[in-house]
Image (tube, rainbow, N blue to C red):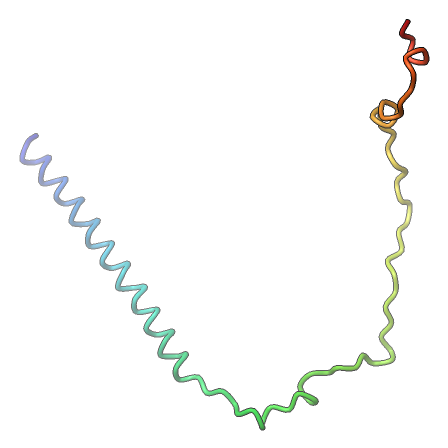
Length: 96
């Protein structure tokens, strides 16, 4: 292997190592920022949250549940397996 080939391989190895380190640092920065934002988030106290006002538990009378109407439903397809599944005697099948 010539010295030029070894330099080219060394270059690619160094570029790969640099990319891996940059990728690791990038995701580490994103994780640290997410942790910082999560720790800074303020949650309201329990007495401030009113469930009766926030969540509606009763359906209004104007809402009705109606079934889905099916129009032009296709007929069941005929299957050869249905006739085979019936236990027909061999005389009816044309066997001796």
